[in-house]
Length: 149
Image (tube, rainbow, N blue to C red; front, side):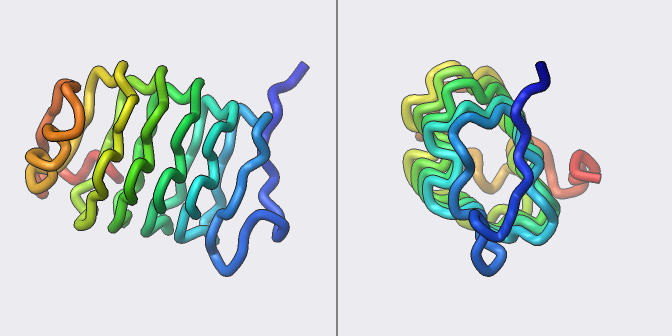
């Protein structure tokens, strides 16, 4: 039996904003037409794997919160904003890659995501992230943005 996958239609995207993902999907590939993950778009879903497009610029408040089965997330280069609680209450989240293109980083992004083992992030966000989680942080410089090629 195959795992549920998302075929994004106009019903859940409005003007390039992904507004809501069905709760029972385990794998989601967000199309290049999406520039914003809307507030609570994935909240509480069964998603295990999310592939985000390089067109993504904003992850709004709680967009990926309460995703119980999500273990890793690689945010795409070009992303500018990560909103309040965007990755909060994800008990199995272990790995996060944050690109150096991020300039706005909300409060409590990782609140109650207590099993994060590694966050790879740019130096300009380290102080902000360190105040939100006890996870091991690995810093990379702008010159190392080849991680996103």
